[in-house]
Length: 294
Image 1 (cartoon, helix red, strand yellow):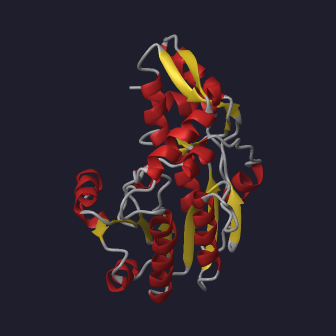
Image 2 (cartoon, helix red, strand yellow):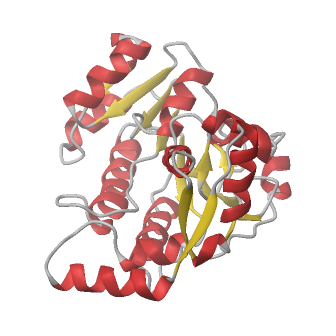
């Protein structure tokens, strides 16, 4: 089974490449820098650079693939990578190219909370991307995931930064419920979904086994590395005001929409998706240990 992974230079893509260290998995990236970094890790033959604006190069990259995994997308907008451009239009182009190439299965990694009717731009864009996949004419599986923990994830980097000093500033004082999923579990789920008959035409919500406040994750991590960290509460209203002021000044980047995503409780029953995909979920302490360990 030949699987092509778009946006493969992110944490999930790299975890997929580690899970299957053979040429059957082909990484697709947009920039030469990302391609060079991946080639150093996994070899020249497993990496292809394409432009999502070039339908011919996408179709060529997908030629002979039995499945395409689409990982590309952003939570924090930047010039040339708005929610519409990075989350919706790339999905549309990849789905069209996959259909043209005769790909049998399309796997989209989406987000818990995705909803095409949402007033939140991020969740709306993720919902619109899901709608494109459902109507693209290819058998599909959509995996909605929460924050990811483990090697190479942004959440792991943030956790290490919070352990770097005596104080950790957390929105809402760290009361937001998170249900992190191990990045390795996300990779295994994605690969399982690539099989044609597995979870066909299904949208699954997959999270980790434990829903826990942000502050408890920091406290557990601190105990694991033998540190004492004091939690400082950052009111959401003050963060919202600062972001609104920056937006009016024309500055892009972290937005009120992203703030809402990060401060909304996550509570998902992961058992149905894990059962359907044949997964044993990684315990939270193991995720934290991998995130903050050497």
